[in-house]
Image 1 (cartoon, rainbow, N blue to C red):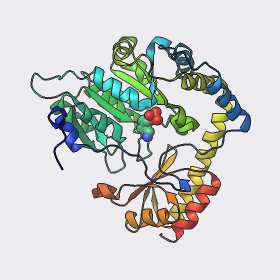
Image 2: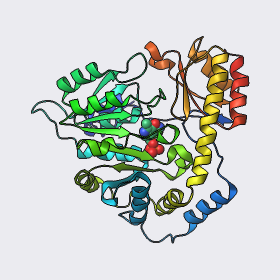
Image 3: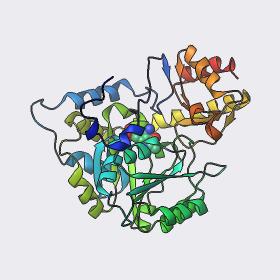
Image 4: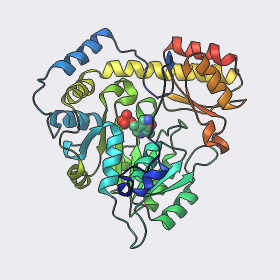
Length: 362
Ligand code: PMP
């Protein structure tokens, strides 16, 4: 094949990247994406549908997302000037990277630091911007390895440190004293605490935002039942939000998503609590059953389980796929992830189907 005529225009770092396709193919049961099971009541569903359809088609959305930012501010205990919204926290991550990409050392690239394993978009988004990515392995309990993080911060001078807590894919929260130690070591960097899964955890660490000037938080409604809307947010110091706002496209969040998400945060709290209670109860049940079948199940504070298989994870993954059930396998990553699956909590029926199918592969 001839080289594309624009090859000389491509950013070199794209050569090492592949498009991130979270899932491919149709499966009857999808427990791969950390989405919520469809448990919203018909009334709540109708209210969201009405909000989606309410506005005109001809006008652009509110470029400042005023109502939604007010609703988020109330939800997280902040002021609207401390909130920036994106099409999912994915976009917010990208905007932060674009904003804070000035190299800290006179030679060398702007750098981000993340534990490993963690949510892949930090790495992909940074690499796509030509930023250097430093990864530090989590310890044997998937918690932060503070001495290794300190050393990497000292050597790598990161612009941003991303910490997801609860973490994806390991499901656990990082211990707060270790998070504090990393924040204190990373004085010249922004530390982003990603609480995408906080609804399923016993508590938030949002108070750290007030304790340290170099901390910002990420939030989303994707995991609590509204992934289709693509609404995520940054909560941070107003002076940071102001800068990030300069690189945000004015109409980044469609009007239907703004309206529906505002309704969700203002009116549907009881509905969300119901979905979360189901997920937490199912998480305990599914974890118990999987452990009974001989799988290693890590403690989870999220809406998924981090499971160690007792035979090659690839076989279990393919066995489930042949039963029309999709989970996430990490066998391709090798090392201590080689026998790991990430299984999203589904409806009771979906989880029963998973258990029934997995028994054959246990
Ligand atoms: N942060 C973490 C830790 C996640 O696991 C995910 C979703 N996989 C996101 C952020 C992205 O969420 P959103 O749908 O808001 O882009």
